[in-house]
Amino acid sequence: MYLHPVKKILGLTVLYSVIIVGIFLLQFRNESVFSKSIGMLHYALAKTGSDGQPASLKNKLQISFRGLEFTADDKSPVIITRSLSNSEEHITLISYNEATPQSCSFNFSEGVSIICTVNGTGSNPGLSLLAKMPESVKSVSIPYKISGSSSLTGTDMSSAAIETKGEKFELHAGSITKGRIVLTSQSPALSYVSVMEKAASSPDAISSFALANEAVYSETVRKFKASVISAFNNALQDNKLLTEQSVTAYVATMAENGQYNQALDTVPDSFKKSQKRTYLSAPYFGALTKTNASLQMQMENYRSMMSHALEIKSCDIFTVDDIATYLCQSGPSADIRSLLQMPSSLPETAISLSQMAGILHTYTALTSLNQELAVVLEPVIKRCTTKILSAVSIANKEITLSENGTPLSPVQAVEAGDALIQYGLAVKEQKLVSYGYFIVNSYLSDTSSMDIYALAEIYPALVHNNTYYPHFAILKQDGTSSVWAWTCASSLSCVKDADGVISLAIDFPQGLTHYLFITGIKPFSRIQIYGMDFRTDPRFETYNSSGYVYLSDIQTLLLKSRQKSEEETIRIFPATDYTVQ
Image (cartoon, rainbow, N blue to C red):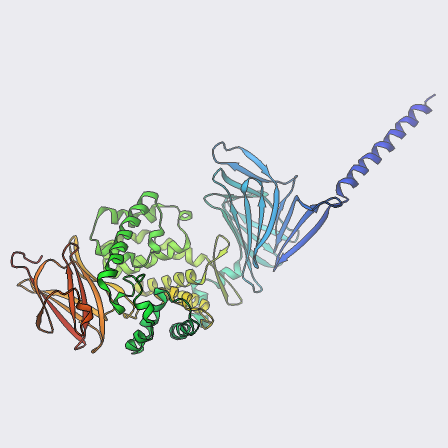
């Protein structure tokens, strides 16, 4: 009597089991799992595809690195939080690509990418993650766990200590909670670094390295200058385009070796006569009247950059060459003080590593140019040195500087290292100087393979004691006015006597010719050169002698100086109806 229902139940059970297994097998019969590695970083993905159809990625990702694991799948999804509504949404994996030999980018829906970068190629590398998100997203939450043989020994809101196989690591991110790491638009980066590696990159540890030695640094600079000359000559032989920056670096280096005229003769006439030349190379090749327009444009650029920086609260202006000199040339103002106060009011995430290095350079320059302005910038300086030091990772005495998982370019790294050197020398902190030596020596260990363009870009960041490289010089500061020059002279001085006569002393090797822009010269009655009165002459550059043109509307003296002696003195007499201030 009961046999029929029992058979029916058993039959249905078998049928449903077959259907479920069939669905399961159908779902996964075309799924394949594959894995890849970047050093100690391992990641696994899954893809599906039916016969004749291209494979597509599944929303299944696993990343592991030295005891730390990240996952992203339907059960443990990556979650975003919207900027305006604060609502949460699950996002799915769409694609991946190996951006560089040391990094891989995992691209999700809603325009979110997570970039994993292995820092260092030695036996003790670190890991960094960078979340890139659109403005509509304010945070990305990533599931994580510690592998079986590892343990979490301590954690707070933004850092954790992890121990695995006897090694200790520090994990830093925007927010660390149980099972999830949250990266935000303000703090989009994660770093995972060995405590031993961190200790190895401390200033105390660095000072014992050979590359942190001053003698090695001096040799690096010497080889760098030799590379500038050889690379320029190679560019000439290969008929490559010569940039103004590369010509300037070459002439300055040759002049330092006592070969100024030889350098000028080597530069092709096509460059010297080029209409594209600017004030940068004018101290060597003249054409002051024509190139003066580019100098005035640069001054206007400084003014507009300062206004823009204050408007959008950007520290990019501190990465601009000679910005400290410009601030002093302009005289004290409320805007200048506001600009120098701005960095300390911004969160650290709003200031990039290159900007921090620029701020450090600016502060160091101001300590000798205008101590009062330097004091205004001082509150942010500790943050600058800390950020540069924290960007360094060292494995097997190999150094890498990176920001948000992205390695710095050689130029950026040298600028950061030089910022530490110049600041350390100014405040007498030898450990920072040694650290800077180590960075510069590491990145410039072989400059022979660099082309002239890269060398010329690095030159002003590395070489500071070669006055033949064109530079600004402040000759006189008086309240809101100043007298300044753009020159390649070894030194300039400006002295006014009781009668208001200005004596301008110019130091440059005897027998050589160079050109100067001197701005801030008030109207005058006459000028004496070589002890004789000279008149303004628009053809002054064509004569085998010194000469000048005065632009009264911008109070600028365009001066050709043919040095009959190593120090020439130009005397400027005040106008009869004008008293020199």
